[in-house]
Image 1: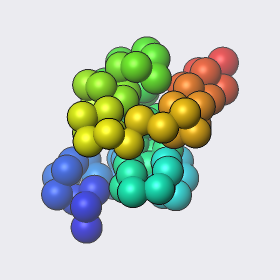
Image 2: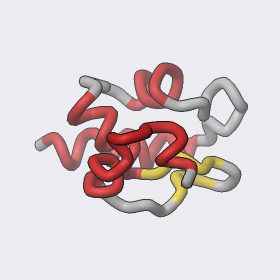
Image 3: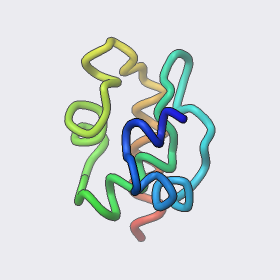
Image 4: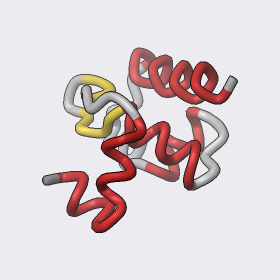
Length: 79
């Protein structure tokens, strides 16, 4: 439901991109959204995803564990 509100008709593409497990405590964003941002929105770094593509940094949920997961998702899947 949250993905449908955020991505509208593109929600199916986001769902197909990867895991729907939340990136961290209190962060509803998922690895699928990170991968979608990388592959479709040209996000190139954890900083880009956390500050520009999601609300994670703005809402204070930019914990080291979340940043590591985002960084790993961007780097591993783009190789």
